Length: 366
Image (cartoon, rainbow, N blue to C red; front, side, top):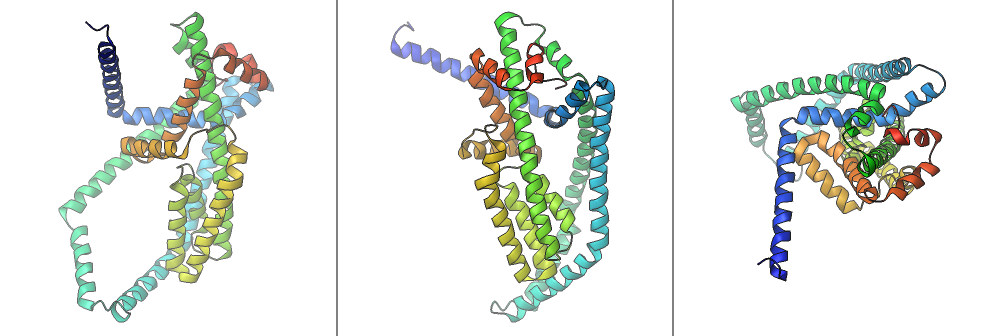
């Protein structure tokens, strides 16, 4: 009955539909525990980025638990120092920016009422009234409550990331061995190969992106400081963070910097800021990114855009950050899934640590 061409096509179509249904169920189930899944993935990205520091200390005789604690506390202290510097910069320059913003809004209102557009004072007053009415409305209040809920969720997720990151740094290889314990023979080798490939691609992507983000932040931050744009340091931090969102991150950071410059320093300085941002992005895309990233992210820009859009829809900002590296990892694993020689050739070219830990899964500790 199903032996002819149409029957075989029907069977294959049914298999595809079942696979798609199963994938949809998995995505739905993961979305129900999105906080935990995102925390796990963020901790994994951080672990593969700073794990080599733990490895280096362990190779030089530092006990595993001591190396983990030193690296872990060092990262936390660095983050605390950055947050402190940004807070101090915002506090010292906020009054200046607020004054400049008020002047800029007055100039904008004058332009609207006396310029070529000829908007009346009554229309401006109506817009202000609508804004005030919205801010004092129940809808805005419910939005504020949703913001409080999101902030609470963020703090919970951050604490979860800290805890998971510590255990990834301390027991990453042990955890991976435990996950592979039900498998043996070719299946276990495949799992080891997939783990090594994932760590290699993730580590290269995170470290490469961090280097590019640091370059962008330093270059644009120096430009803002030279032009005496307020909040240069916080804006540089924003540039660094948004650089982890491919394609759109740099554009958004540049728009924020140009907007601050427009409000505080006027249109000429804002135009110079836009030129600096465009020049830095061009230098990054044409020279630095191919040099630093190398083979870590071999994806077509269309694939990156689709992954970025899907990740944003599923998990918001966290999805935008995680979607591209996870897509790169999935593609790399597919290529080595049934190709043991690819993994062996990589181990022979790689470092001694990767060779020694080949049987234990990902490079220790992660």
